Image (cartoon, rainbow, N blue to C red):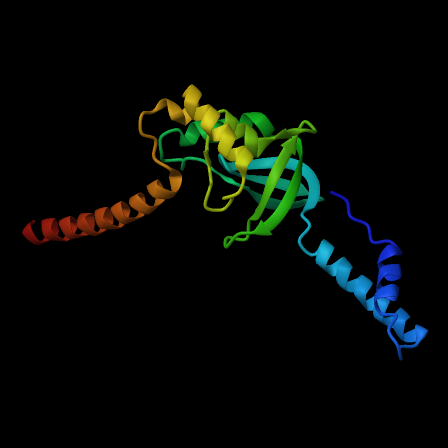
Length: 205
């Protein structure tokens, strides 16, 4: 979507502020400020787009794109792939790599996450959306928590699930966010129990 600010906003502002006791020079100053405010409102949250070559794939939903010699980590917006140590995690990573590694892509950036990664949508071969393709082929989940109103991703996931594509072939696939929450607690308990066992063995040796 392209938005342009034309002289119409000044004309509108001029007519709006043509009140008794206000000089024409003051109207010009006011209308100029109104135009600036309109521009700020329109352009502050507009997503930016840039292109670059994919030089790395960390997992199914995180890639590295090179922009003018500077690497940028991209976290795909609206989706969540299985973790690498989770069922279908390696397959999701491989699919992402097969689709875009070494290719020039266009990244539409929306924001940054807490890890400093750019949240965005990745297009390759001009029109193909990596985000949507991974969902439609069953390589990831629609990340409803961070894209709650994305009806298209929701629809693509329903279609993939109905066709039992990818991870939906399993009877009870575990969402990555639940897997992360569960595995974190399990790993901590495992490490703690292992250390306690090692100390006990040393005592009796």
